[in-house]
Amino acid sequence: MDNDPRYPIGKYEPQPFSQQQKEKWLLDIQLLPQDIEHAVSQLDAYQLETPYREGGWTVKQLVHHVADSHINAYIRFKLAITEENPPIKTYEEKQWALLPDVESLPINVSITLLHALHQRWFMAIKDLTDEQWQRTVYRPEQDVQQTVWHLLGMYAWHCRHHVKHITALRERMGW
Ligand code: NI
Image (tube, rainbow, N blue to C red):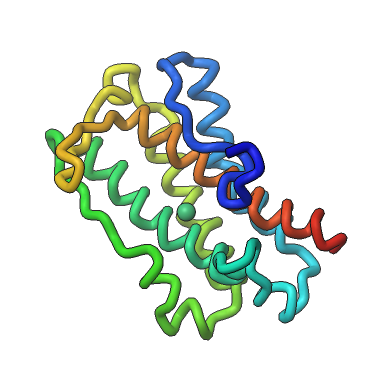
């Protein structure tokens, strides 16, 4: 799996709760907007329409996808913090990536959205208590509970995962 272009940083590996790990993952959430902005800087229209791997999403689709995904994430965190084990709704990410907004809008619309969204997301969760990190959501399709801690790690991974898709493409193409 090491050379699988879909997983340039590997797959998400859950970690036990610790303050140190929490600070790292929170930093990933806090810095994603500027990291992704930096990753796409100076790319032209042709480059933005280039798939990060054969048959994969284009850079433009990747950026809009991260916004789509993290809108859902923000809602999942807020539900988890305010309700008892709420069921969370999945979404068809591949189909979302084909909708007209993704097709038509420049990536700076989603980057602007990500700046605002992550500011709110980070502020909403940065001071959760150790107990709150153990609150859960319920995933009906898999019939499992996941902790907010698990979600934090997963989305911190998701930030780095997609930024790396873009930066790895640039390295490979010499952009
Ligand atoms: Ni994704």
